[in-house]
Length: 405
Image 1 (spheres, rainbow, N blue to C red):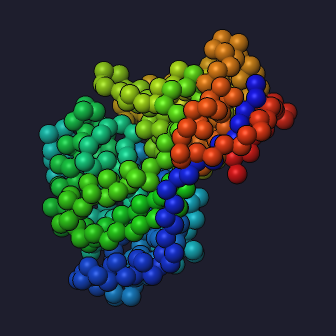
Image 2 (image 1 turned 180 degrees about the vertical axis):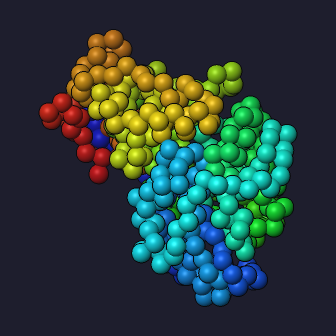
């Protein structure tokens, strides 16, 4: 099989001075910052510049007379333990030494209200602080559609609520989640604990593009507008119909479901309407990102994996995350082949060599490879540049030998 390398002209809008942008946008809010302890939320995603953004928020709060500290806020991730969640944010560069702030990790929560599907909780350290500063990236959600998806409201509900509120939220049917996230988020806002939010938008190259400081009362109205802005940056596959998609790495650092369902066009949730595009017959995943710490949620969205990926799975961490969401198919282990080379050979024998695409992961889609039969379609796509010289699909010691840089 011969392949052509493709460069996608994704939306580029990298922000210059992050610290200055944060200070400027927060100063413009005119906040009355409490002269006490303020918790800053820290999630598990591989957000660009997350350590610098978090540190800058802490520096701004100190300049206003507050005493900031950091709270790992990530629902059931990394084993749903305080130690695991602390280790997760530290792996992202959010350490006490680097941030010049204390990290307070706990799974203890306080009940703050009730909604139709159950109780809403708040992290104990957040509840006991004078206020909470919410920080998160605005992004399409992998389970549901709606005006509010992954962002500040989700951080307030699922992140700050730890595994207990995550279970409440995910107990709602998927077609009701768009309403539940707003209803539960309003309970958190009504607690009076939220000082402000900082919404992050990333461009198509996974770079910080925009930082928006938001007053708590404005979060429900501003977040839908920011989600629409995010859509112009969101990277997608340049072809809507594929026979085979090979994903080099999956993991929570790329998406909450390991592979972004909006990219692969498949949510895999029983009983609910799925996405229409892109249409992909076979998906194979080759490896699990180290930053995911063994959590392989989303592995069940693949049809084939390697034994290397299978051996990297921490079943306990994966189980807790999948079980909390309730979408059990996403944790099922697909057929595992010994090497990348065997996996590709097996798929070729059964499904042919037409309409193949190779990508590094579902977050970074600047560089990818396509089979020769897709060249004409790529040429017609104004967002793509094609390397005309084909290269043979090859392997080194059984591993795929393609450069995505």
